[in-house]
Length: 393
Ligand SMILES: [Fe+2]
Image 1 (cartoon, helix red, strand yellow):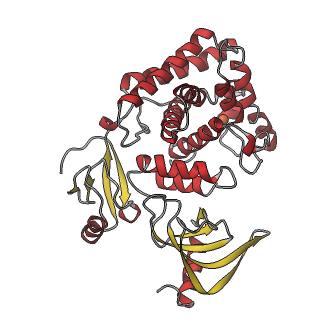
Image 2 (tube, protein in one colour; image 1 turned 135 degrees about the vertical axis):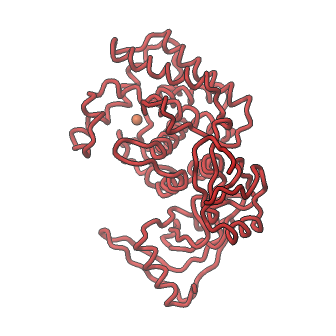
Image 3 (cartoon, helix red, strand yellow; image 1 turned 180 degrees about the vertical axis):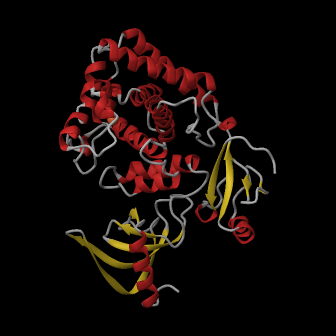
């Protein structure tokens, strides 16, 4: 077997997006190289690999593919640490340190400008970045910069300050007692009240810096607001500016995919699924659709967050089975709709149709996907019912 460096990640062939490019080579469970990097994943090739090697194969995420230089990453982590130490000591941030943070963001953006982004490797699990919070602030900055660039609607200046806001996102936590930050048990309502102050604290730390850009302040202040108005400050989400909403998605994605002392990291597939399942609750459809379509494949080795045969819920309170990927917009697969549902006091009620409705969500403007069903018990019940009704075999 060839010597490989980098993190070994498993790839489920059922989740590969047809016609995408995998930037890493694929290996069988036995260690045999089965596909060269940059091979176009035609349905025929995917089918062949499934038949020969089973559903699960491996790739090695090599650091060679890292988009930010080692030097700039180290500077970003070090500056993050300096900022926190400075605020801990003096309760504020000096203009000089703020300029250092700006420099970090400039270097990240310069690196992104000079690289063709094929895969986002956030360098997790590397031993030399032991302190989660510093690594997290850098990761959220990188993700936010990439997301904002791919969205294509922001000016260079806006991208810079959005990225800076992402990088400094949680500096307000420096004013929260350490004991609470390190607490492993569930937060009490009193704990939550205290934690909810950190966006405001962050804003206060930065607001008097001469020339501070409003995007930075907005991003810090509003990064815990939610689509259903149940965020930290219960603000009307639809009236909020875009930067905090974008950064909030990146914040949650990186938090989920990072290992913590009290839980393992979540796989990119499941983190993307989590974001999709937060549509209309935490996030709005359009931003999640953008994230999943534009950044998802770069984060997730060309895999989708669902596969054929998965069940999903639609905006019409209907359940459907995913029949095929849509190559232009992964949020709009071809589906078979088979029942209406309602949730009353925690109980799920379903009304099956006499015959299923086959529809392409790319063209069906009345329906959109809001959730991929991931509850194993529900999946088994639904599958049994569909077989009984003769809708699937
Ligand atoms: Fe936060």
